Length: 281
Length: 108
Image (cartoon, rainbow over all chains, first blue to last red; front, side):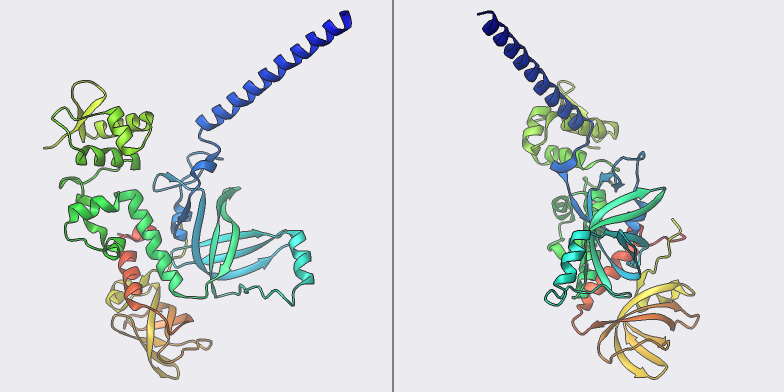
């Protein structure tokens, strides 16, 4: 009896402990999410020029790099191979795409090297040679104030048009983040009728906000502005909740975006602090 | 960032880039030993170096220095084959100068 009682008490205590541990774990991952780490859910693969890589901002050491005020995770770019240096642990390529030069490191996987040695005859891997063009997928790294790209994959470019397409794509994405949506450009531009034109001819993007130039605001702020501009409403404007559901954003994001727009006098509050309308003048 | 860039240009931009190193993608229209002519939205004369191998009618990408007479002293030539859409190439040159912030450092 005593023994059984003791046993059950212990097991009860242990369960309590386990439950507490589980809760602790949950709260830890929650705080990580709030700190903006663990970007797996919002990983992007952004086409960039090497100049953009060199100009990328790092708010503080260990923070994610930003291009056009947007965090980058994976990047992709092209470049002409200027130099290849093979080290024991990695191969360093110097790539030049005409906008700048950057070092790209591909870590050597020892196991893979061995397996490649044995099957070298059968697998004809495309070769990376100096002065030929290559495409890189990787992550930007900073080490002792020097930037390099840790490559996941480097492949030779076989169709030279890839270079041209890549540069246009990088331009397009740059314009998307700095000047806003393709749709708003199209509507306000009136005559813009094809992706091709918008791809590089988006000069009219500046005037996409009712003839006023769009101040430098975040993508979320642009989205909110667009919703306010395009949704049917009376002179009271729209409530934050309403905007959030139309824009598929969460309320906090909308509130932040609203603060930005308010500070630029692009919107104003109507019946209460959380109901906004576009300020036209 | 003092990184050496080679802005993409074509014949239209030559006079604003004298004495600078540039990148030109054009089509080889004539070959005369040490010199050649390419078409890149207008014709451009090239002074070739020894290891430049150009093929007539192929596209070639030149990295070179614009001379005062608007010819190009070739530093490097890369054959780009015969399958190049020059409309897209022109679009890149246009984008390079219209949105230069992502392509090259300019003095103005």
